Image 1: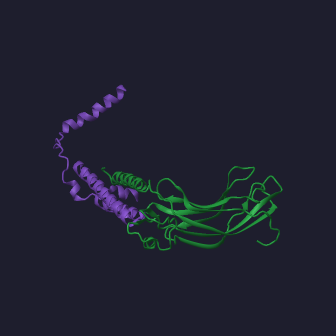
Image 2 (image 1 turned 30 degrees about the horizontal axis):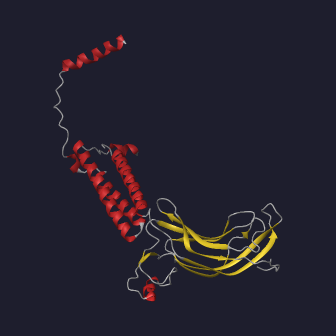
Image 3 (image 1 turned 180 degrees about the vertical axis):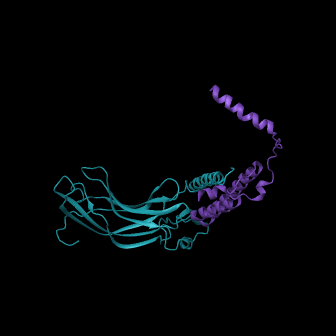
Length: 217
Length: 102
């Protein structure tokens, strides 16, 4: 500590260690947080085609086209609702007014922002899940979005087209009874693990029995 | 250029070094606590980092230059013994003898 350089060295090393401890503390404050949010997914139109698939082992595969509506308020979410007589599972656009709708004085809503100080961005994706004769479980990602910190987190998307092709491994989409669409997201933190959260709403729908042969999408 | 920087005296005595270390550790820890609480309240980790960097800059200013408060307890050396001319003549001859033996 006799020279400027040795003093600067020990000062810098100490500051860096303290910074690392602060970052670990930041991770600890949000490690056990529950990040589930109720989500409303509705499908308006489904079109099914059987086309040439150049990426797979067979000649023709099923290609689905799904148009959907998405409604989620990711910024606010409920922590608990006490003694509410109505089974309300989705949040209205104004979360606090839920109390006046159910007309019960003991109903309580506790709202907390999901963009806390340990969240850098959210990666949302909509995936379709179904079972076919050849595969027990298929999961295909149809659409995704990156939500940066500071952007509008109230999603009200109507008549969205899927971003990626909904190719099936084979011909299992025709007359499929149950295809479930769920919205999930990855929380990208500043420090710590990346939790994968599944939204609590989903929509199941059957696919049509016949292929569509028209040329336009 | 570098020799010019090296010739600037930047030493501190031992008590001054201890004081400097205590000062910078205290300043950095206090700014860390303030930054952590402020960032937790306003939900932005960037402010925690900014306050930490400000604390680092303040402690740099306080401890890197050799302020006079770090030189208040200099080491007390024994007074130098005056050298007589007889001792001066004996020393180089002793050195020559030792080198020849090697």
